[in-house]
Image (cartoon, rainbow, N blue to C red):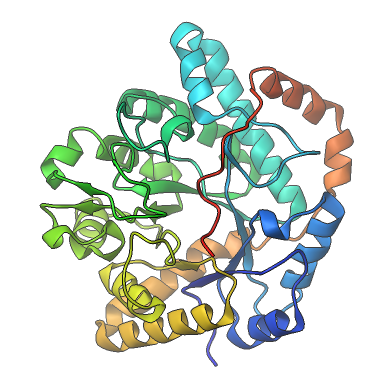
Amino acid sequence: MKPQIHLIIALQGPEPSEAELTFLNRVRPAGVILFGRNLIGVKQISTLIKAIGDTAGAPTIWIDQEGGRVQRLRDPLTRYPSPYQFAVLARTDPIRAERLLFTAGRLCGEELGALGIGVNCAPVLDIREAEADPVIGDRAFGSHFSEVIMNATSWLHGFRQTGVMPIGKHFPGHGAALADSHHALPVLDKSIKAMEKWELNPFRAVLPHLPGIMTAHLALSRVDDGVPATWSRTLLHKLLRQKWRYPGVIVSDALEMKALHGTMEERARLAMMAGCDLLLCCTGRMEDNEAVIEGIARATKAMDAQEVEASRRRVRHVLAPYRLQPGSIRRLLKDPGYRKRRQQVEAVAEEVFALDPTIPLA
């Protein structure tokens, strides 16, 4: 079987099963994304990542490490403020906020890199909106696009120094949604022109700093007959690729989310044909992975051959620098400079009791 370079999968538990290792060696996906169910402690995480890396193709390792509610890696690593806490601080002390955002981004990348995690599905570029579903809420860097641009860019300046790949999300903007796309399809009654005046501004401004961008399972009622953005060729191909000339990879949000309908095969086929380069399948079920592979195959047979090859080249080129080898996380944890930076960031962090809304659906 040819390497499945469009596929990102998840595992069931804290160590790969024989079936999963066999699958990784046979299929050679582009990446493996880690969730709380895979993570126990730094020693176990290092062992898990090494086991994945020893398989054929050595896939990139992915994670969601936004800060606040969505923070897969916790103790003994940094307790990060939510992005919105930085926005609140920036309104009264912008210089300190900018410095702390840079430091938080750098810390995040240092910790991930030391573990061998090469890709972080962050930052969130959605705008926090009053009256919206709380799925975004304090995951946003602000309540105005100018705040999101300023704060996310400061965080990215620190993060990009570490050699770990950021992925901005959730294009074209999930902040105003009245539904959580993990459970239902949000629909905004907006045109692209209306989105360009508000939601799309952070994405357009921050794109030069982003090797990857993640789609939202959110529909614009006036675009492509209201299909989800993940399946919208108007948004992904015509806007991102042709109008904005975006050269990075476009990543689907998790295909199993209930905002989408149909089989996993059909979901994958439609996402590929719309313009996604990488597809996230996060259930950990082999039958779902196989269905996504079949959907990719059906899509690539129907697509223009030059477009398929361009997508493959993008994936190979963009992901190549982020196949990291695990370093020494324990050495990092003892480093005086790291410890000082960490203390500065944790001083503004609050305890997080709210439920993480991004835990994969069963």
